[in-house]
Length: 180
Image (cartoon, rainbow, N blue to C red; front, side, top):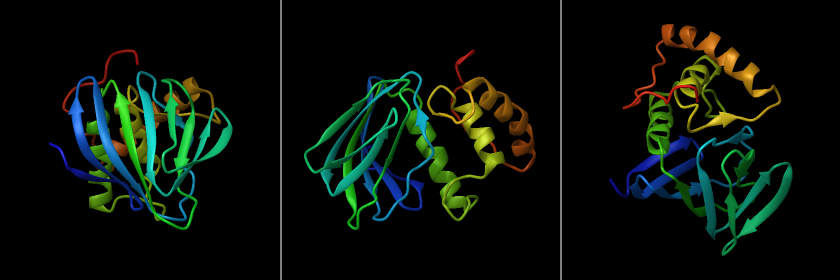
């Protein structure tokens, strides 16, 4: 399973270095001149990032900072954040998610969407695809604002059936935990 390379967006890739229930470790590559992804959080997982080369912009709970080679950052579960490479050189980052949960399955779903070409010009899934995948993986990944979480969940729950009709289907190996 190690060294599996997955595209999260056209400009961001991860290579799986280790996967166990306690933690998923990947090495992420961020292309230069990136833009911030949507603010998001992980409800049941902590993340740790260590910049190996280049630099990474971060916004955590509204506070921006630049991380350079040797810098690290811990993001506790439930904390809204964004990461991107706004610099002119590629960035490599060691990224550990603990516990691993279904993060690897989430990454594989994003990779499958990239490979299928069913994403927008920005490399992100459209609203119907997002509704399907964010509903299925709500235990792993949630958008953080500007709408309140219950409103977003309701919107995604309403759009997900339409997304499935359009052919988007999460291939999760296990069902989402109830009530998450």
